[in-house]
Image (cartoon, rainbow, N blue to C red; front, side):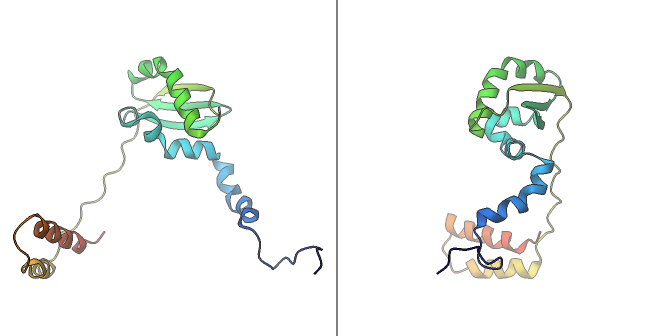
Length: 151
């Protein structure tokens, strides 16, 4: 067995492929930025996440968009927020917080679901007809109706 150069078409470790696959994504956004954006509600809690949105992480400065008077509250909480963000990231990635007043965009509401067809509702009722009255029958009927709706 020779220990020379490995054949280029042989098996390769996944770790060798990751940089080539992620380079384009990380060029647009650093991994820490993506993690802060994805986990923002976990980091700051649901109350602050409802009125704030992280916009950008650059050179150790995290820009946070917030609605009007929330900026003053965030300035008072900035030390705690920095500690929470860096603890979540596992390193002292963010040194400064920058607040900009901008109304966070509300997430788009999903389109309304179409009503289930009558034949499907009849099949659901027939499937649970033999079950005794009670919460189990109601739950199974609700599950059956939910499976009829297509997104």
